[in-house]
Image (tube, rainbow, N blue to C red; front, side, top):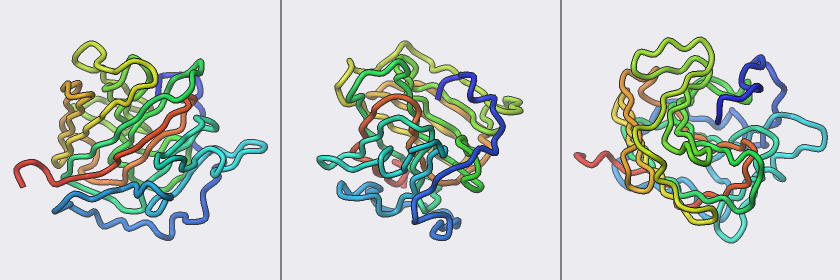
Length: 225
């Protein structure tokens, strides 16, 4: 997610959801006690696909499983979202760009709350935009560090880019402890946020312009547990 024009659009855009829609969401957050794999390498069990409705669009065209990884075309805008909420965990996601586009952009959302009523849910994004991986993007009035946020906010990463060259796999780790969030990109501590809007929520992977693949998506208990 980058600070682009469409982010200022109204939040009432029509969406297309996969058949496993909101009725399966478990809102009581889970605190993991062991490593829990969120993507099984075969299908989207445990996830719901959400995209902005456009002529000819299909959630199953945007989001596919190929060769054991999640493949996203990057269009239309949208995300896949876990059907379970989580709290107090370490999330690991590996990603790479599999084709070039003008807008090499995506993101990992945490603390997603509320309904899937807009292309941007209320959530805190760990930015994956090429060159900016590790930024916070605060979606739909979400906040960290006491930032006043009437719509979309941004908190820049702490260091120069630690991303790998195009086509190589990157590893993002997001450590969530209550309302405190830390982001690591390929082992570099890129961001720290406190006093987040929520201390629990669903996890999302974003479709936003860049052809991207995801693998090794899992959560673990916090290191001290």
